[in-house]
Image (tube, rainbow, N blue to C red; front, side, top):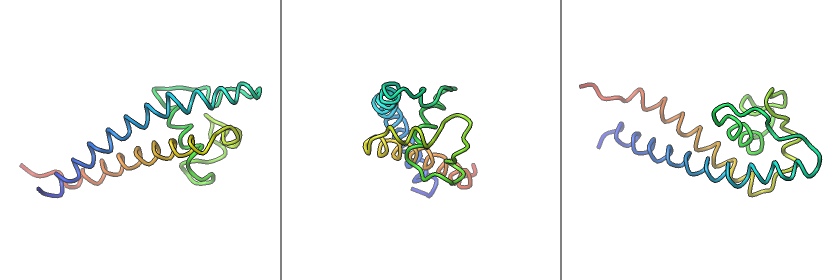
Amino acid sequence: MNVFDVLLILWVVSFFAIAISWFVFSRFSIPAIDKRMIEAGAPKSCPVDIMGLRVFTIANAISLPVGNPLNHRHDPFIDVDMVRKYVTPTDKRLGLILSLSIYTFLTLTIVSSFYIPDK
């Protein structure tokens, strides 16, 4: 087993981690956040949903620290400070798991591209 095989196994595991965490976050946390916001009279957390971008945007907004390039206050899709008022600690954890699994997958994709074996 070489480095590429190990990276490939980790890549597949992280892909399934994205799928599971995406499903759990989008089915349990997002509707709960939207419900709390609507009950408080606030607009929907992220009105734009382009091929799942809404789930990823909300996960980044609630789980990552504000002020870095991945989560900034001037995001055109979401009002980060307003959404953070309506989340629970469980929502934050689920969002963090989703964000970390996506960024792990992307990192493994880039790193493993340097280890593709020659035939």
